[in-house]
Image 1 (cartoon, rainbow over the protein chains, first blue to last red):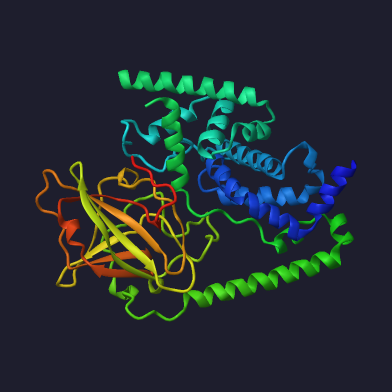
Image 2 (image 1 turned 120 degrees about the horizontal axis):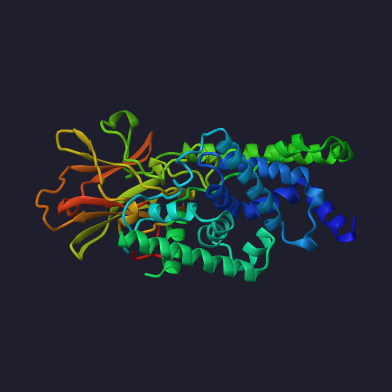
Length: 175
Length: 249
């Protein structure tokens, strides 16, 4: 283990230090969990992710990224695993598109539910980037760090996703 | 509107609709989850830390509980739970004013009836819609959390209570979104009611307005006459006032 890693694990070995770090990232963790975990499972997924982070805290290396990115990766993986588990159990049918808080018309004519439905039909990577960038409100750099890709890849994925959404929205408005 | 702006606004509304942040496991839970080999290594200091954290959590919880049970300041309009009926099902809103099952602790204790004093804020028409602002002053010495769409009831002079139903979603009200948060001692919370002025002559008319903060906590105020101008259209979520970033839909 490198000196930096030893320092990091030593620092995070303290319960107080670890919970202080969690306190700092909980607002973002909350949004990620509510965005990517199955509806109703956000709290459980967050708890699992925190416990997993604590269990494997010796693997965290600060030189490879921030604590926030590290713990958010765990949370995202936990969310996807839960989604997959629910999907296998057949409990997720019709619920994945129910991310919108509103079914009513928005001032510009469409609806958030309609938009959420279109987002749910995007390829997984585009969904992740749209969710993290627009809904969780992470900057491109942090989205890239979280997904393990370059900022340029995030930007091009955003362009592709927006183009796809625009085409589908135009198609629905025409029909 | 281009897709980028639309996504930004949808994201903003989605974030505003989310309740208080989730809570991570308590230090004691982390202690229980420590790998066996590592737990042995630092058992004494970690157990001591967990015990100390537990004591601190206990003290904080007790303080929070005593805050909720503090005396009602003079002049605060508070109703007893038994005096408020709920004849109709509550309107379905995603921004619940009460902590949901997925929320274990709000940033501050949720506001209770004894902490808030309701009053009428500003009123006025705009583009065929009437807007009524209801202010909720925190008259206690503790900050409290205010968020979500608060169920409302109208009380007739005879004492009959009627749940107010708003056909429009809270996201369509002005202002929207309303950001939830903590109301400082002496500070204000607020929410807004929109009424449709055109083509609606007979608006709701009651003697007083009951604002439900939770199933057990309510505040009551005289009926804002401006809310009788037109039909009830939409109710915004509640939050601290002034809002950090007001948004005009």
